[in-house]
Length: 544
Image (cartoon, rainbow, N blue to C red; front, side, top):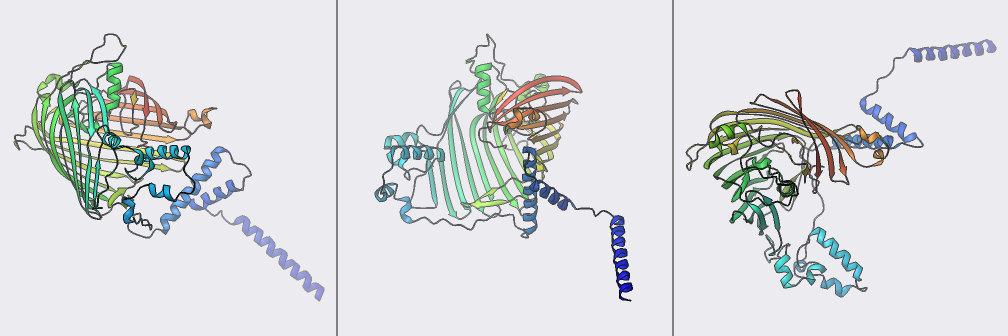
């Protein structure tokens, strides 16, 4: 009986094992979630004894993305403010004493090499006067010429930053002003309480070919910390490119003019006052509105100075090359303009931090939507303009999986009326016409004629760029061991001229960290138009 029972149990266990195997075979595959698949790939890579460069990069990015998602899940706050828990308290003697205190307490004197290191460090950080060994050695005459720090005052709410006689100078050249020098005079700032302050910054200049003084000043009054609500007043008398805020870089134009006799920008005299109010509404909306009054004067070339060896080549006249400037020269004549402006923008996930009562916003990978409005008001202070323009757009820059950066911008605009419109108020576009640029700008054209497509009716423009470690040439030997990146781009423009303009680009970027080399090709109405190379040196890395 016992033997029979034992055999029966073995048969039951065997049947159970067989049934489990059958059920396991028939059991459908379990679909893994996106996060589980990524976790599985991470574990597979970690278990490998050796990783290739591509696998190491892939592992790093997957772990970074996983960490970012987990931090987002843990963040249950509704505020986008980034706060720090450290505080800095200054002793009253900190502003009165200098490094002589350290010299007295130092048991081992500084060597000549130590002092040279401090000199180099101080020159980079631009530390305030009277607080370092460097400035301790500077004489009164040296401060008079080169001072660029802050004057310590008994009132700790006042920040005075005057410039020495030879500090804050810049210089450039164009064919209208000739050689021009400008000088920042410094700044004055007073904090009424934390986050409530006003600041004034003046600047002067002199255009030698015109024998005329130039000047500009900016006044900012912030009256609310949380929303960074500011009243801004700007004014001055300057020579202005007809492309306005989208003007060619002054130093690139200096090189293009003096060495290659290419004077792309054309100028007019602008005597102006601007008043603008900016404020954040909540944490996702930015609102700005204001107005400006301009007294614009027509100008002509006053200098033919050149350092070029390009034979007898001559500068072009100070007239923008555009069909309507030829058919109606009156749009370049002297006039007055009163203009009202407003813009509202929305962007999610825009984190910020307060430092010294000022609000500093971090870049966000979320799309930025914006709507703009401009109104030329006739007869206000003898204003000669009358027009209404609206525009709207979206732009974004973000990373996706293993792609370093994807950016795009789409914008469209329309003049609802242009009854009295001068060329300075035409819609301009960001163009880098010269082969050398001192900045690396997104959403710009390279081969587009500098003024020919400026619009007085309607326009649509679109830009897209993809930057990554490996796209095409980086797979080749030698190049694949560098830290350079590759970038491909495309741009499109359509205006009332009814010409479809296309531009495509490919290049190597971040060569020696801040040098870009790109090749461009353009098409007009599906026909080949032009080819060119561009070398960009982004000194301040503002677009990295």
